[in-house]
Image (cartoon, rainbow, N blue to C red; front, side, top):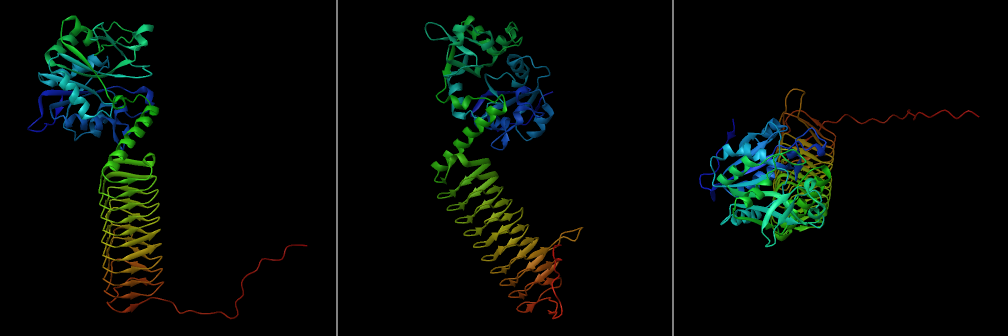
Length: 470
């Protein structure tokens, strides 16, 4: 039985059902993973198509799954769609026929593909608009090299009269440069009737959805073909080479959108966005930056080369210097991070904080103006304002069974190479001497240190290697 989550209460297209075909095995991907789950921009191919379908606000979205169906449904369990299984893959016409009962008598049906992720909502709206006054509208495009695509056949008046798959095409038909994208919009009742008449008399032995065009023409139905202005968005994925090409197209488009919004991208070919990015004006992204998950960059943020930010919020005018890795962190305004710094989940840095090279901060709040400039680890800590943490300092937060909290008060100075053994509190304006191991609370305003007495051995000599044999 199909499973469904309801769409919105007020749809722009309440008479429309979108059917997404996502049942193919994708053998050319040579993967254990269903093709539609391979990532583009960090998200499954199918997720992009569902997002675009949702932008149309139809009455329902029906996804036809087959190969790896359980994995597909699990990966997109929160998607507001109706799932329909195509138990036996007998072609696109058969797949759409499996989905029709879940379409619940929709007046208009729009057919999309789970492995064509870059199609835009505007193009689909144009295809639906073309259906006004017609019974069937197909989406076509012109390619300088149409190899592999079904060709659009037109009569002497220019009216589309059929689609022939390449394996079934004659030499003359293969020379046609107008090809079928597979996208189709049709009147629901008529599409159902045509699908009942589609047969498997072709080289593939499958029920072709494309045969509906010739059947519609034979019935005297009004048909049209919409030629794409931007063929690039209708390119699909059959193997990993094509996936890589689409990834670069997708990344280029994302980079261009950022630049049009006021972001400087030093080299659009060397930016990877694998999620959703909100960026303010005058943000600067240097080369080889990777942005993953949900990332917010407020106005004036600068991200240096070779940085990775995942699920982060960076406030205005902060600087992330080269080779820094941030995950699940919030960086305050005017803060400076890196180079070679790591912020782990739960790191929350206030305004003007400095976190320098080879510093790691995890699940800690660091107060305004505090500095952790080099070679330190701060985990499970609350650090006050104006604190200076010297090089080589670590919070010893884990006892082998549980994590414990370190508290450092405002204005404290932590000398280099200090170990703070949690749970422990360092008071306001306290000073910790370099090289100390602090395992009890250090009082405010005082110097606390643990240091063995220094000795010099006058009678000691450094060992020497024996002289080499003559």
